[in-house]
Length: 303
Image 1 (cartoon, helix red, strand yellow):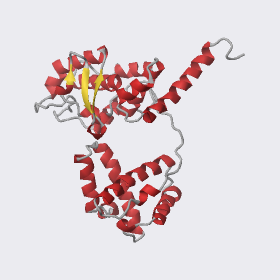
Image 2 (cartoon, rainbow, N blue to C red):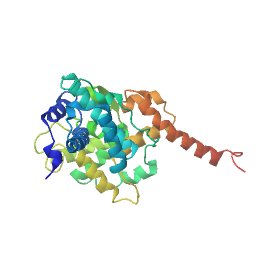
Image 3 (cartoon, helix red, strand yellow):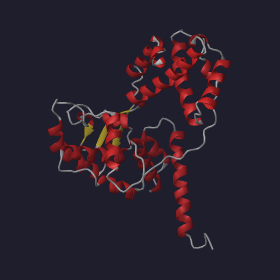
Image 4 (tube, one colour):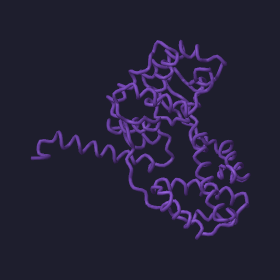
């Protein structure tokens, strides 16, 4: 018997609906929130506790369980704490609990983890994989080009509609986190892929007269999971011994811009980061790259 399904309460159902319809969170994000909260509710149930009446000591005990029994790393624990802070903040606002006890808890220190990215020559090899003579190949070619050209999140990518594209200015209106709109631009390589797809492959795939840009083989809207599956299939056809994700291409977009001399504030705007702190992680990557160039190029860098 699946105890996690047993412990799924109406408060959680309502919270997930709130995230979807009021906060406009991506489906993938909501699934992760649900998994984290269900794991917590399962633990609370096993301890014969009421999740609406927990105390600070109960949370500390839960953190010990995650660390010592589940063997979760610090990043996973912090992510789960973030999910639970959001859930209890919702419960507090709805007057279902007296206070958000999770707001009193600090998670373990996160080890600095630099974002993984592709070198440009690796991306060029990846771009050669899709068969541009087929509808699906044209779609996949555009998918790669647009992820890299714009740096958009995968949830933003799959929600692009034809009407959002300003072809004259090579710009796309993106609906980002928290329903915030921004324009992203794209270059000539992406433009060529877009035109070929819209004039050919899109007409074949669009069996249901959809308003969305990226469609699956049946004419439905391509999902975030579908994008991840496509990327997994494409990289297997290359010589690259790397895992791939949409976010890794986003990291590559930001890193390559900074390596080419683009300023941090511009990259922040292009990525749709609300805070500059979220963008600053890329400076560590580019600093490492600068050191590498220095030691290989400067005549008195080493004996």
